[in-house]
Length: 518
Image (tube, rainbow, N blue to C red; front, side, top):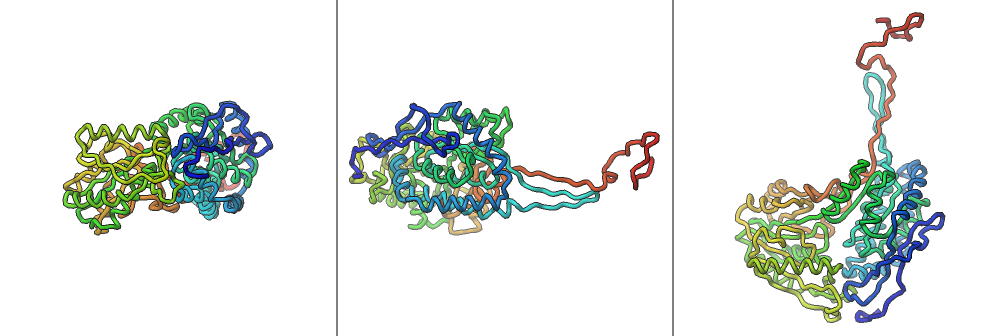
């Protein structure tokens, strides 16, 4: 399709696992359009609006699948996960990436990373099966015990729109390895590429192990988080929605894994060298996916001795960014995915300007971008903003970045920690010892040194937030642990060794062998 085409493709209905027919078309006429944020005239597909009754049917299927899936060893489940990864590899990754770019707006290399991550995550967690199956024996004076992990039960996965396939996989796959059937609610904003991935995954697994219910948060999400058959909820998204999920899940005490918002600081220390590599990394960490990454750089603090140098170099480097249609090879950052986020970022920048900040717009418009038809924003660098300006104090989730000076490490740490968020942060310096001292004082789940972008947190590194940035951890074996529970099986060989007086022997009854009358 030409970049400036107004043609549409046939609407794609999201699937639902209906009885014995895997991923049949969702039985509803209520649908929302999914439009290209680079050109609102282009209809990419439609998303069905599921009902509470359809969630109930999906949960029936998941409950029915639970005993058989839990009965397999993790090694047995891992073989099926590897087969699912092979099936995904046989799909047309380029076509799924293009679909994701059309529904989300991100550039093609990001979409390829997003959709291609599913198979990699399946194989990574399949490789942890032996660790899950391992049982620990414990011996004491009265017998032996065995410690093992067992599934939690039916798990709901509620997916965000910014990296839908990759983030869904980070929640879904550890839960599957741990033996839990999963019901997935895709985001209604960018559901199509994820659904194509889930279609293949579900077909590679026993019926009911993975089901999909599309729809809105207030209907599908709320039904999943309140139903007593759901034993765990995994969610990535805003802190506000996380609070709503906690309240909904509280009556049935569900296990929660919440990766929430972040206002992630980057601290350029006095010991830093402001060179091309540092500046390039900061620009990447800020503007990848138009700033719509949960742990991307949201505010930059630079030591006053480095401040002017950094601002000048940053403006120069970021000025090379090209904003346009993600399908255009010239484009470096695409449009914002939703109109509401576009409006919010503009409002935050306008508020900072009104409060005396200096606002510098950088970059250029791509030649093929239809600016009047998309959610395009040129990158913005904001200096001299007050610390309590909303652009500084809140998560902007867009291509606008405040850069502010500090004078001491204590001040930098106080500024970094002066927020309810604590997802990620970074420290920039040529002195590793200095970096370590400062990093240990930052209240964040992850602190990176001299990097802060996609790939900085690999699959083996536990990832999650402090404070109001979330509960629990993703990545690594800890993610599998959080999708399971410990069980102790204790064999008491000699109860006589347990505390407390013996029960008196009734008349006419002999004491057990080896037990003396008291």
